[in-house]
Amino acid sequence: PVFYYYVGAVGVFVFVGLTAYDTQRIKEMYYQGYGHEVMSKLSIMGALSLYLNFINMFMMLLYA
Image (tube, rainbow, N blue to C red):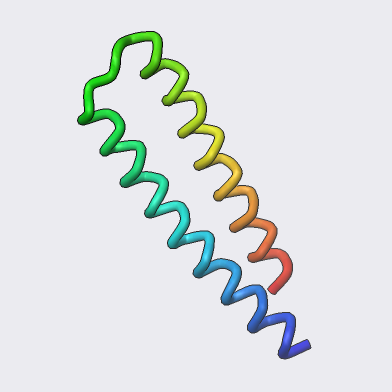
C-alpha cells in the first residue's frame, strides 16, 4: 500500500507540472498573434490538453 501512495503522489506532481507547462504554452501561443481561425483551433487543442491533464491528475489522486 505504501508503494501505491508514492506512485500516486509522484503522478500528481507530474501532472501538476504538465498543467503549468501547458498553461504557459497556451499563453505564449496567444501572444504570438495568429489569425482568428488558427487561434480558435489552437484554443480547442489547448483546452483539451488541460482537460486531459486534470483528468489524469484526478485519477492519480484516486490511485494514492
